[in-house]
Amino acid sequence: SAVISQKPSRDICQRGTSLTIQCQVDSQVTMMFWYRQQPGQSLTLIATANQGSEATYESGFVIDKFPISRPNLTFSTLTVSNMSPEDSSIYLCSGEWGGGDNEQFFGPGTRLTVL
Amino acid sequence: RKEVEQDPGPFNVPEGATVAFNCTYSNSASQSFFWYRQDCRKEPKLLMSVYSSGNEDGRFTAQLNRASQYISLLIRDSKLSDSATYLCAVNTNAGKSTFGDGTTLTVKP
Image (cartoon, rainbow over all chains, first blue to last red; front, side, top):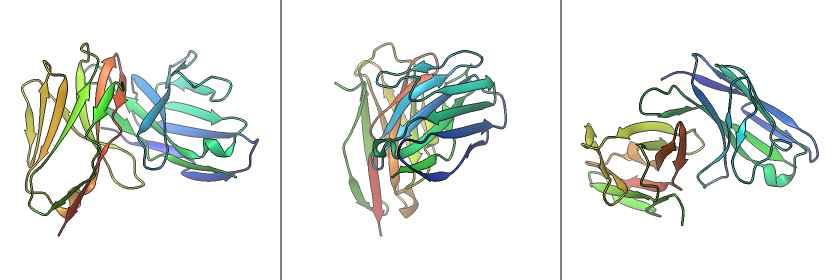
């Protein structure tokens, strides 16, 4: 396994603003993902962060709302744009090393509250 | 129908009990299977991968039934510290996992 960190760990934001969440892995990973988890619910995959190219978004998520960057194999950012209270959630990044069982390891999450 | 479905729970069991969770998946091309544990207000952590031959790690046993498309997790001699939400995950495409909604376990003294 490896250590995955996220910044910020939590934030309270005003409606209409944007927040960028950073995800740093302490070793190179093949795949990186961004998830959203509402309290008491399971993980919803937002997108796969592709190194050096546009992210691959899941149904219901679009680049204009959730732009993602992945400039290298250890770092990615997720921006939550033009936030509304419905965006209040926990946002988690994960990494997968590939070449084996495809298990994922998660960052500690960013708890976002939009007022 | 969801791609991955779990027992809805919650499961409330006394210490020392044996408890089993099941998880069914719809995509027969699924290749990798996992159980994760998630504590309250924490991120999911990999508990164990699930292999075709079944695998055991201490008090935890995971099994895969490809014919019936389900995986299971058995916890023996439950401890208070086992209280958590258990998520199954199925990997159907290269690298992308689909998670179940989770089953909450509470072990009581």
